[in-house]
Image (cartoon, rainbow over all chains, first blue to last red; front, top):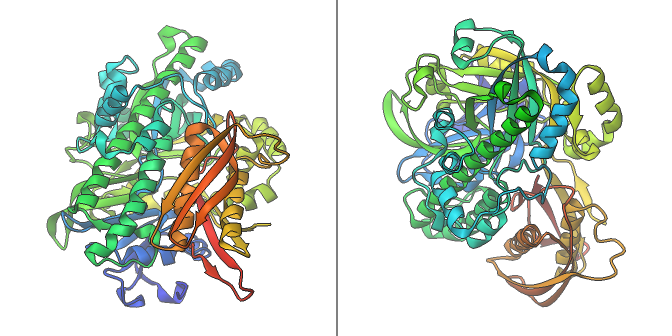
Length: 482
Length: 136
């Protein structure tokens, strides 16, 4: 298969590039790349654009297959990919969501300033470490019975709140209020439920983390005020997903769809793009199971919030323990949404794999006080670099099906990172510039800042293209690695 | 010895074997080594044993589905399945007994064994070979 080269790509407008439909005869739509030229040259180094071309072959795909500037090579879909297929008979592809269903990020704000916590930082990290189980195979403190598991899968974060692990107000500030109503627990296999029964409230490993940061810069005072962010304020960011339960749902349904595809006369250039019509029995079963796994992930992040609040209370006392939820966004998910396509409002199945929803002002999906500002879009950097809080705009609806980037995006493989990074030295260097990192040396090396793209370039691209607005910049002071 | 191949986000390996059985066994060993580096070295006993039965449309599907099944069992039973005995192994079906040791935690979390780039085929030396990408 011919590798995509720069000569195959044409510029449509600033920050938007196109691989025309004529590039390969099985493309249903063109492929669009949101990037500045420096990032585009980087992106051409791996095979992500060939994967993007494959996505453009999905049955029922609308307008274009898209990648965000933090794109990198995945399997099947590239990470950072967005695809919308026609509702109700367009394709649904588990590969377009990924194995970590509803991997996402949530941001909490404290009432404390960075000066208030400096002396206690080490104690805080130890306490967070004690409260929040990290690493593979680490079970949490909650063991779900079969009935409780089904409730978690059905109502997501609401289960946590009903059991005292959060407040009703928290639910308002979670995408979809932390619950997808189409979830059906019985669509989730026993194997998946077994994998998830002791993992609620756990971070897992890989690129997952809990990070303590502080706001170093505010770009939009009015939106920042609405989000509850001000300069110097300490924040906590949580990045994790649906753990083994979600991984198993993806595994089960990719296997099922590979066999079922032939029945619907679908052939895809990559097995990981296995898909079926959304309204087929297999498509419906997967969607119900995916929604259930997404609910599990929201419940997981809610429990970790509770653990973080406990750690905060232990160190700073109950009266200063308020950690308020700014927002919780999913970046591996499929949603039924309505978007304007060819000047007509159409219902579509939006696949986001490593892409964040970025709804602009006016969307009735948003909490009441964010309707005028657009939703918070939380973009974590790597452990040694800044993170950003952006706001969704109406341009994101026009251009990217209401989507934005999800992070800095990798540019070095984990193996390559381990070859060039000396983890103990990196840990010490980060400590010298005021960033405490807790985690295995292997994990620290694999997730080193050098393994990631320049977040400033990624954020400049999405804001300059108009799909999001800069609101605030966060600097990490402590990172607990999964 | 399995070869690690450059991949931006995940772990990609190249495996080969003189027989299908060797290919499957070496793939399993590679997966165990990702989960827990050298976890299967110098094993003197096994803590548990499980029987698995897998069917697929072709040999590539069979290998990936077999590894996925073992990965799920590894996570549920907190075990590293270092050894396998195949009582049946064709291009579409397998029946095997797995032998494992218990571990409190692994080094790395494998989210999924992907079909992307996997293609079990015979190479010019008449050996079976394939690439496998693990989602990390």
